[in-house]
Image (cartoon, rainbow, N blue to C red; front, side):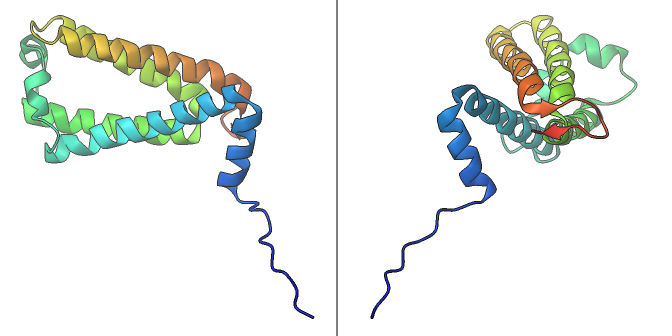
Length: 153
C-alpha cells in the first residue's frame, strides 16, 4: 500500500516569523524596520570604503571639514565604521540601538541642513529618523529589556 507524502509544515524561524506577522501586523512592521535598520547602515557604511553608490565626501558640510583634524576621506571612513557598528548594534539590541541610530541621523540632518543644496536628502533622513524611533517603540514590545539578557521575545 502506497503512503501519501504530505510535507510537514515548516517549523523554521522564517516560518514562525511569517505566521506571527499574519497574526500581529505590528510584529511585521517591527521586523521590516529591524531588517531595514540593519541593512541600510551596513550597506551605507560599507560603501564609505568603496564609493559605489556615490562619492560620500560631497555630502560633508565645509564647516565640518574646517573643525576636523581629518581629511574628508578619513572622516568618511570613520563614519563608515560607525554606521557598520550601528547596524550590528541594531541586529543585537534594537530596543536601544534604534535610539543611537536616530541620534546619528539627527547629526546627519544637521550636517545636511547647514550645507546648501542637500535639503531633500535631509528631509529623507528625517523620515528615516522617524522610522528609527518607530523601531525603538516597537522593540519595547518585541524584545526583552536589558543588555545581558535582552533579545527577541
